[in-house]
Image (cartoon, rainbow, N blue to C red):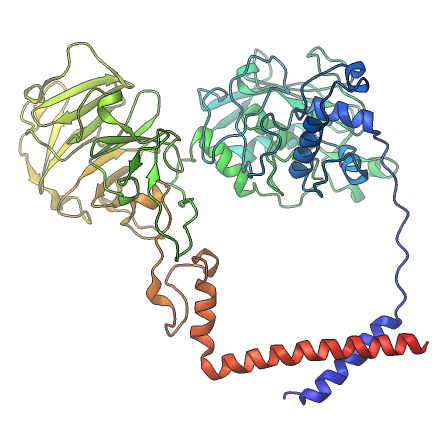
Length: 602
């Protein structure tokens, strides 16, 4: 039952009077920061915001004030505190927080764009605090990542704060944080030289980066090109339990080993610090986290370096779609040439190379793909890099030989990575029994045979022999596929993918039909492989259930949520909502007036 509107106003006024009568709590005394401005400058130098200079140069005013202000603002932006450009109290307090000893960022100090995740690029520095570049979104810099997926580790020195088995358990759990989302495996060894050495040390411990005791820098790690080792300050009090339940933490500050180890191993695998709030790779200590799961920012970063686990391709992470009232903007490559084909989704061919790269071809252009979309600088012209005039008919990769083939008409070109082998191009007659002008070619993981598709037929080919007896066969044998295929290949997860007209299908090699998945196949090639904006269907607004099938309202374009509300509420109810909002505003003003009157009377 609704209250009369006048009574509603009176109750609001009475509530305001009661709240006015409640005494305001006295704030607790704030502990002023112990970091002074001179130490603040050293902090900015140590963590990469300022170039290294001597203390005498700084006190002599040789550090340009403009650069200093930019550095402070960059740190404040990174730490999510008020941006003032001054070493004020909140900034100095943030510098007091326990943190990782690896540098945060090296780049333009006035950049305001979110880093999302940072990936360590090869550098000449031999310090674990090597410079972190600010990447483009979805960039995978290849300068610092492990070239293998099966890594070993050894714990060469333990802390006295915990039993050895608890240290070992926390370290193993921290490695599994990253293994869960990648093809990486981590195996502990007890002797010999590991890929990753884990140890606890105090003070100077041989790497030129001494620890500072309790608080401050908790640990640091080397990036892959420098060995990947992780060192932990044994001047800290380490725990693997909640602080309240550990007797060590009654009179001292405890540090959770698992969360720090998981962060440091992110560096060991090639990730730099992230300025995304809540990211594991943020530089500041986050404390004990029950039921920890790796945040999306960190998942994207590590998968950009190593790919996904042995499961299906992840959900798309499209570029933001422009507002609906804007003119569509075409994609541009690094040279500024308009490329209208990227988000059409149509592919002529897709394949891999010996070094693990994936390449997609359409018309005269090609893209190198990472796990989320094209690498920056693409598309490029096929002829400029591969020496073949596009478009091509098909592409093929043989994992057993590491050779990649581009097929066009009656000829084919053989490559090692993107380098043309001597003696090519050659005639398709070498593929005995295979027709010319094929539509697609791929090696099937189920039997290791090579398949060529043309029109509504396919040919099975045995290496060193030719087309098997009994072929061609109708393409309809591959249950669930369309009657024509533009491209096909086996991806690094071992799954077989077929592409046609801007859509793709994943084949279930075990059950010999198109895979069942949610969302179902076919899916959009542009969205899931080329990183293009998700296409929204506009006709759901005002429908009976008011929701787009299989979508979430937070994914709708700008203004869609307002349209949805109007479609659901309707005209008369919408007017009532508007009227109620106006009345509420009047009641708030009335309550403020009543409370001020009572206060003055006192």
